[in-house]
Length: 256
Length: 256
DNA sequence: GATGTCGGTTCATTATTTGAACCCTTATTT
DNA sequence: AAATAAGGGTTCAAATAATGAACCGACATC
Image (cartoon, rainbow over all chains, first blue to last red; front, side):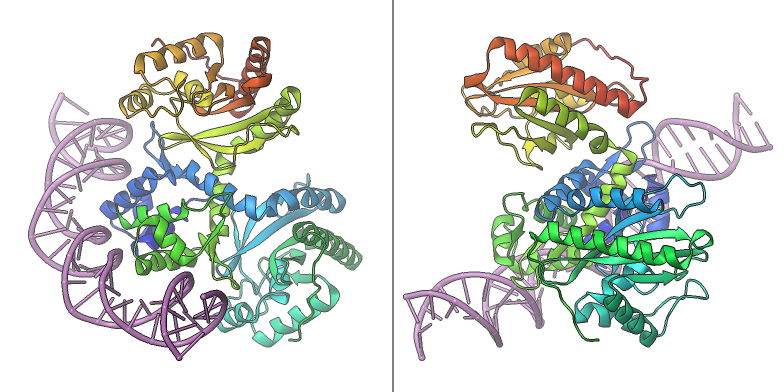
C-alpha cells in the first residue's frame, strides 16, 4: 500500500462509536509502526483532516474533511435533496429509514432516521453496507453498471446469516425481481430478525448512485407491511431521483 | 512536502466553482508531474476520496469524504445545530450570513445563506477566510487560545485593501473591542465596499471553535444597521454555543 | 495528414518512508 | 516513596516507495 492509502486507512479507523483514538491505539489497529502512524497523523493534522485534542492528546477527524465534503455536496446535493424525503418516509413507516451512497465497492450510510420504538433496527452514519446481502445493495446492483455487478459477484461473498444469498445466480435473480417490482426485499441477509426493503436512487445517466431503505424487526412485519413499505420507498427514491436530475430522468431497464 | 500532503493538496484544488478537473489541469495547478498526479489520484480513488467521471474522465471529490465528514459531524454536531439559526438570522437581517469553523490556520466557510438582493455579498461554501482581515477572524481571535493568536500576529499579515489592519497592535485593539462589545466589526478589511459583523461560537472550554457573521454591501449599511446586526449575530452565536454545550457554557473573559 | 491536447504508462534514478530503540511524562502498583 | 507500566513522541541508518522525462494511443483541430 502506498503512503496515501495508509494515511486514509488511518482516517477510516474513526467511527461514530469511537470518534477519538490515541496514538498507540491507532498504531495497533492500523498495524503501522508508532513512528509511521504519528508521521501520518502529523501530515493529516497539518491539512485539517485530523485534529488533536489539547487535553487528552487523542486524535479525531478534522474540519478539513467537512470542508471538502461540502464542496462535493454543492455539486451533488444528494443529502440536501434526500433528507427531507427520508424524514417523510420515516414518519410514514415508523421504522428506521437510511440513505446510502455508493463508494468504492460498498454503500456508505449517509443519513439515518430512527423511529421512537425501543425495539428498532439501529444503523450508524458512516456504516458500510455490503452489496450482496442487504436490500440497499440489491437495489443498487439492480441499476448498477455491468462492471460493478460483475466485480461484486466475482468477489468472495460472505454469508452473514443462514439466510444470506451467496450464489451469484440467486443474487442475480433477486436483482431481477427488484428491477421488475421497483424495490428490493432482503430477508435477514445481514442480520437475523431484520427485514428491509430498498429502492435505487438514479443519476441522470440512469445508473444508481445510492439507495433509500426501510429496515424493521421481522417480528412486527406482516407481508402487507412489506408491500406498503416497498411502494413507499420506491416513491421516495423516484422523487429524490427526479429532484436530483431535474425531472428528465431516463428510466433505464436493462436485461440481466 | 510529504506524499500525504501532496495528495491532500490535490483534493484542495477542487472548489465549488470548479468541482471537476482533468488530469493535466490538476498536474498543472498542483505543480506535480502528471505521473505523480495520476498515482495520487489513483490512490485517492481507491479509497473513495476522489471519483472519476466515466464519460469525461475528469476527477471530482468522492463519497468517502462525505462519510468521514458525517462521522465527524456525529461528534461535533456543529452544522446541524447552527444551520437553523443561520437561516433565522439571514431572514431577520436580509443580508448574507455565513458560518465558519476553524481549521489549521484559517476559518473554513461551512454554510452560507444569501439574501434575495441582486447586490449582495457572495460567499462560497469551502471558502477560506484569513483571521486578521475579516469580522469572523477577529471574533475568532478574541476568544482563541493564546498560541493561535500569537501564531496569527507573528505571521505575515496581508493587506487586501487600503482598510486592512496589518499592525499587530491594531488587530489586538480590534479584538479587545470585539470582546467587550460581544461582536466584531470589520470595515472593508478583505474587500472594498463590504462591511461585516461577527461573533464567536464557543466550545465547552470557553474557546472559540467557529464564528457566525453577517456581511453586507457598505452602501446600504447605516451605523444603526451595524448595531442591530451585531446584536443579532451575538445572540445567534450565544444560542448556538448554548445548544452545542448543553447550556453549561463558561463565559470566558481573558485579558489581552 | 500534420499538429496539438489529453489521459495514461514505463523504469532507472532519487528522495522519502520505515521501525527498532530510545526518551519523557503520567498514572498505577508495590 | 520507589518501582513499574503505558502512552505520546523522537532519532537515524536501512529499506522502500515516489519521481519525472520520455513515450503511447486516442481524439480533435487545422
